[in-house]
Image 1 (tube, rainbow, N blue to C red):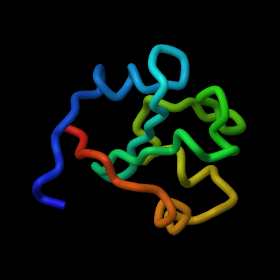
Image 2: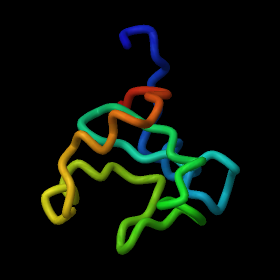
Image 3: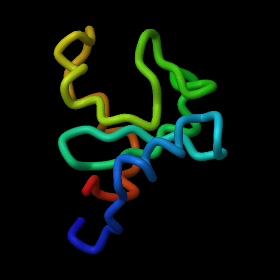
Image 4: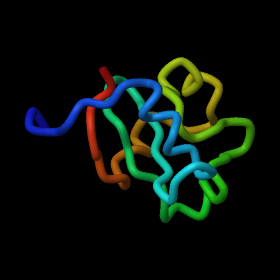
Length: 78
């Protein structure tokens, strides 16, 4: 995981499902690729938007952080 590229919040924001094909979200410093998840279609998952750090928002979710296990880590958040 140490060899992953770093991305800024501005770079992450471009992967919101609108500006580029990739749909990414960040959690606890890791950036996850969620492009192919049917739950993130169009960059929105319930009231959450892709291209953001979701660390603070997870406490409101009906699931735990283990949900991120099924997604590929593509980078680290600066």
